[in-house]
Image (cartoon, rainbow, N blue to C red; front, top):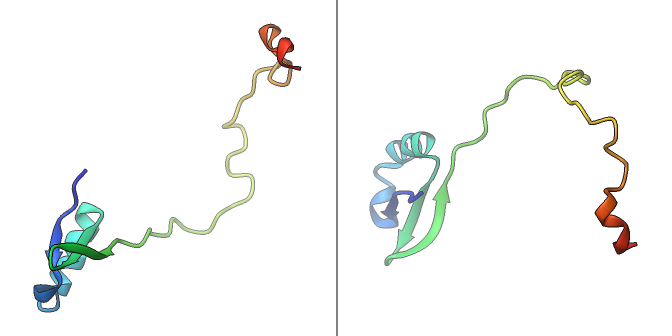
Length: 76
């Protein structure tokens, strides 16, 4: 994925627009003389407080998950 690059000279006038663009596209790269010098990235949005045990029942392991596979014994 290619992110938009903006020359730093014009970035000061359009900072609000660049932040909006970063929130839509994921990132805006700021350049000086054609070389990348910084990037604007959106902050991750909080999903609310984490709750211990909220994934209970969602993870299932096979009954034999800790048994060594037959063809693996030669490595020990």
